Image 1 (cartoon, rainbow, N blue to C red):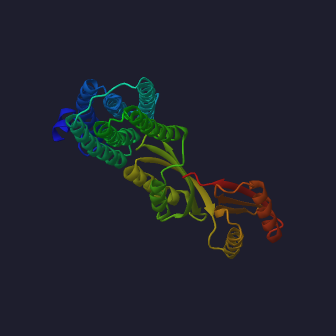
Image 2 (spheres, one colour):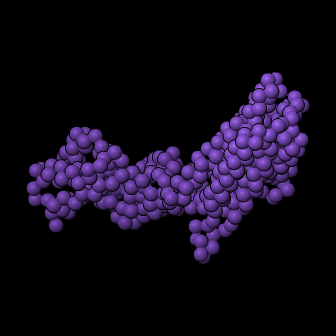
Image 3 (cartoon, one colour):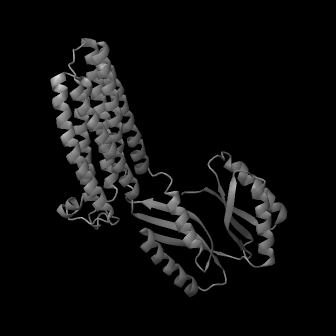
Length: 378
């Protein structure tokens, strides 16, 4: 492994280095296994073993795609792409998943033809022993690749690793069907090929769905968001934080926005100093370019405390309302501003708006209620 890190001139502790070396390792192993299985499958006329061999060749190609994606994603930002090229990894993962599905469909067709034409096969315990050995190697490789992929947050590596583990299970099916043929003369090779094909297609579709979800923009990394929220709320001048949005420009690159509640008595200079330090801290710890919006709030006056208690009572009686923030009273214009955060099970937003407005108007008839209803973004 150290030789590969030196050969490709990548940092052992870097994300790109881990992806590059793991991909190269997968390419080497898959090519060797593929050649072995194609030779055995050709000699024995086993469609199941041939399918596995061709699938291993596809695995080598997917590792090449993962390697290319990691290299391209590591390019420096440019004027045209100021956030860098991290999302290329999603595109390569999309190609990898598509190749896996296409390969599975091709094997499925061959397996059906094998059943229709009832082709004879010739297998031996030696060939099965070789297949079993490659299955163990693929299982170990798959486990290692998935572990590395999760550690460095690489959907491409996770996809490649999942396919490797599926190959080991497919080999088990091939071995069982071949033993049945040797012992009982019952040719289940085509049916084994169908099962293997389905496993391949299933793995490809699952990874394809995850990648498409990343490209469309799914709910952000909650574990990361909770860590960032904690750091923001621990800031000396921040009373509360809400409305965080993390925009993904690659597995380890984000830009973010978050609204923070600040005591309305603080000066701009005091607020700026602490928020600027917080921005730098978040950048260094999480590689997130964070921008803050500010709510100036009153948390100490008797009127504010009473109003917050009343809003909290309303929330307790409505199961789909999670919290509130951004409470602000404009005395000059007689307006009361507040945001309610709701869960995704709430369907009748208009009904909630009417209930809350009527509730607050009974308590504060002279104020016009400016309510914003929203969900958590991460």
